[in-house]
Image (spheres, rainbow, N blue to C red):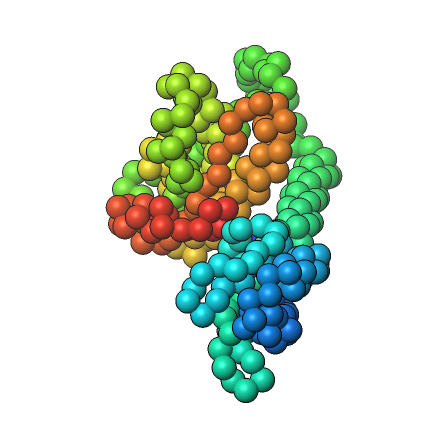
Length: 306
């Protein structure tokens, strides 16, 4: 049941993101066409005052963060708001008789606040389910009947040695070793965005300290989902999953990747406030065992996405 709910949650997140992006693009396209009809005469007459007025009014609308006007030669004749955004729409501005007066480019608001809210709820739901599962296991253990006593004439076995107590607040999680002859079923690969630029900007000691902190986070995620460490963060980082079948290993890699990216995103504001370097990652999950091809696909991915 828990596995089914996780699958449904992951599918809903991806479907929600795709639908939200498509809806924003459709809204921005309609607004761009309406603004282009309004600004066509001003572009044809090169009325910079009217162009800038239309630009300022348009940027004040909620889904718009920037606007740019170009003439028929492609030269910029007016702009307002931000200069760049991943979400942009370009439409022609034509006069009523069909003559082209120029082009208009709208830059849309591409913030991920709705997705972050959904992801936060999903992570909270997963944690609650895990806590319920642990509580159920503890209750079941307490309800089990005690073991039958030894026969009276049987000598009592020697008391086993008491293991030393671990005073650490977070004792390490036991990890199962890779079985002999086990085959790689799935892998999670992680690459750092603009790593070459970051490596040139900071000293080796400072960079290694930052990489070690993110490596500790990746180790904890690997322990949760029975992953095994590949190359460390800063190299061709990744986790390898050997438990079969392949569908189970791929799902574990998927959950590990989503959790790692989510925690990295939540820690970014805290690290910036503390004056620490904040890294951004690209992630890839694949059941293909070709590690070189998986790394190349990971590097070509989208920052912050799996």
